Amino acid sequence: GGRAGRAGPQPRGAAGGRRAQEAATIFEELGERFAWTPRLAAGAAAAALRMNDPDAAERHLLDAHAKDARAADVLANLAVAAAHGGKPSGRWLAALRAAAPSHPIVARLDAAADAFDRAATEYAVPQGAAA
Image: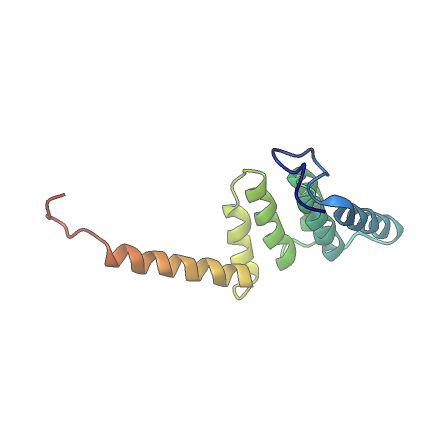
């Protein structure tokens, strides 16, 4: 199958397809049968994000955060879910930096900030120069 019929916005759930829905169902069953763990919640949230439902992802992750406020994967996924939902992610990124300073997302953010600073320095207009 090609990409026919995929133009324009898709209804929630359609973007992730059958596999994301299957994953979401499996995570729900595991969470209900056993105890919801931060890792299960992160998996359920990832499936929800794949299905273009950042609100459901955030609900799963906030539940996990209530159980373990320093779980790095939960904090990282909260930042991603916030960004996907058009919400500020700074709170979650700051918490992630404090809880897991060597997390890959923190490392990538630091590298991007360093690259920006180098570029800003290289292309800065000297003070007093005519614009």
